[in-house]
Image (cartoon, rainbow, N blue to C red; front, side, top):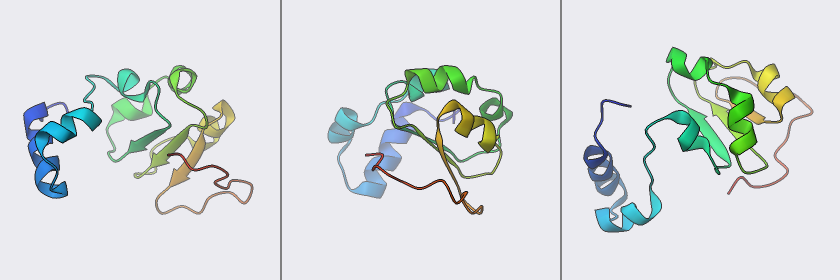
Amino acid sequence: DPKVTSERIFLDLSEQTGTNETDLLNHVHIANEPYAAAKDSHAIVVCTEWDEFIKLDYELIYSTMQKPSYIFDGRLILDHDQLMSIGFNVFCIGKKPPKNQFLTQSPL
């Protein structure tokens, strides 16, 4: 959420996990835009219906991610067929995956 400060994010994570903020700083990185956030990652989790996530250049994002690359669509807002044609492994909450889609490697 662009309206939430990094200080608030670290404070909330610290309270929820019991981890001190200094340790969190070594493991949590906050990006100012989605392309930077996805770079070198294995997974994207979409938890909002915001239009900005529908309109992203997912081919560009895929090209900068580690492989295998995953998208978890928690709001059923993305074009899953298009994402799979790009190469993403797509998983959704509330929608059964296609029979030919299965997890072959751990994303972590």
